[in-house]
Image (cartoon, rainbow, N blue to C red; front, top):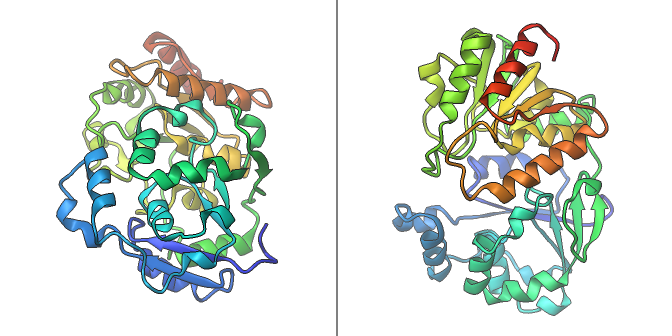
Length: 340
């Protein structure tokens, strides 16, 4: 999309192995300049803070700034995916906001479902960073893999991002090289569970009970679990389910390289959506969002996810959304009979 333009990229140490990734990217000539930014390592004294308090302290921290070698005032166009701390550091040093074209690109489900416009994180961020209020009205284009799936209206020109193919060996070779990934799933499983963020965010839900029902019906030896990246331990060990090999590389890279299962199970993880939207994946998927207790406050997000799943189902039925545990058991029986 930008092959005829000189493009720089900024990578922060929030990304695991960011410095090694940047060094490997230098071997390819896709980017004019590749910059790294130390955010996390310069603010280790705030590591025990959580959520919005951490955000507030990081933004007010005098150590939070871009590397001196990065001149953000030379850019005519800037792409961002989130009102995050890296974006804040760019705005903090940008003296010519009125002359810059800002573009938003998708990251996960946030660009498609209405919840991400909520009065929580983004609004609080804007209060801490007044410059962000100046930027948002200037966003003219939003880059999405599936613009037709977006479930709310904003005054953006929607631009479709070209999808990759599993047969595109050049892009897969490039991604494997920069993430130092080698095919390493020798023992393939029929089913793959995607863990959500609940445990990492200390949200008490009964997801393991739902998964216990699933695993006991279909057999623990038939499963891998893709652990949520913020969880440090495999909670599914107690169910006898091993973690999907691949380490901390992006899930989409594993998908492009491996045969990862015949059916996916998750509560609300975006990981089951990205292959379908980016690569045309047809893997059958069971969403457990209506089978759990204590998901108060998630109603808007669940509605958005169900909307998106149903939009995808209009072309081909790949999502199954049981309304309760009883219907889940019925679906599991169909899975056992290979009717799904």
